[in-house]
Amino acid sequence: MTKPHLVELDTRGLVCPMPLLQAKRALNAMAPGQRLQVLSTDQGSVRDFRVFAEQSGHILLASDEVDGVYRHLLQKI
Image 1 (cartoon, one colour):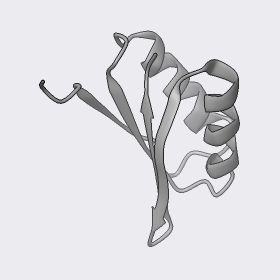
Image 2 (cartoon, rainbow, N blue to C red):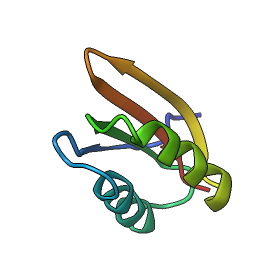
Image 3 (cartoon, one colour):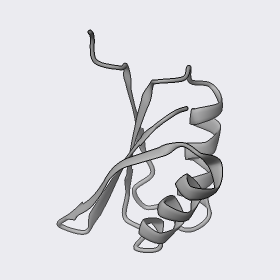
C-alpha cells in the first residue's frame, strides 16, 4: 500500500481564524484519504484543529509544537 498524498499548508504568521479557514478550503479540494499538514504560529490553532476534527469527522493524526511552530496533520475522510 502506498502512502497517502501529503498536502502542505503554511499558515505561519496568520491568526485565528485564518489557519483553520485555509485548512478547510484545502481539505475541500482534496480526495478522501489524503493528508494535510498545516504549519501555524497561532497558539489557538491547537484547540481549533482539535475541535474542527471532532466536528468535521476528519482525523487529526498529530498535533505538536517545535520552536513556536505548531504542526497539525489531518487526514480527510
